[in-house]
Amino acid sequence: MAISRRDFLKLAAAGVISLSLPAKPVRAKGRFIRAEGSHSMLYDAVKCVGCRACQLACKARSKLPYEPDVTGLYEAPHDLTASTWTIIKLYDGEHQDSFVKQQCMHCIDPACVSVCPVAALQKTPEGPVVYHGERCIGCRYCMAACPFGIPKSQW
Image 1 (cartoon, helix red, strand yellow):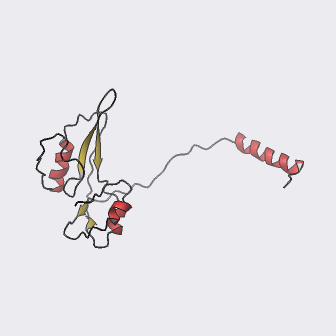
Image 2 (tube, helix red, strand yellow):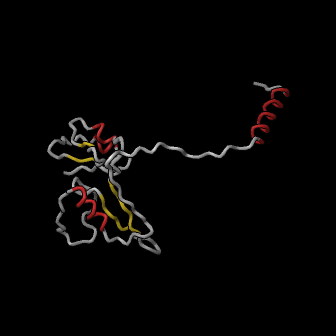
Image 3 (cartoon, one colour):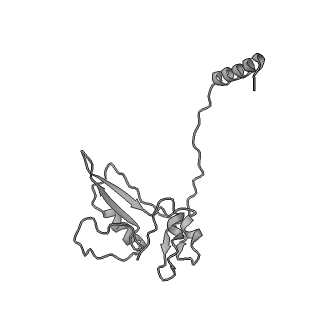
């Protein structure tokens, strides 16, 4: 496929003109949808000292049962469970350790809820996604659907 000199010059001129036009600044504009009566918790990774007060506040606010610390370790519980929606994980760094919060995002339109065939995961009107273990059949669709990797299989 040969391109004529005239077509080449047309394309080159169009490219130069398009590059010389002033660029319009691009801004992300998302629709923020706030559910009435929903709650949130602010986490500042720079200020976090790993006291885990946010973990206890989440349990208290959500009326979740406290899990006994059978190991006596600071890192208990190790991962998110049906009764632990927020955890602080310690990551050892080369120069400084850091504490990183991991939690269920309580999405506005949660994928884990929509794929569950037995409604073991449900979104409450206040916002949280709650788990009903007695309904779960262990299909693990929720684990595959969640983009944050939050639902875990409990053996």
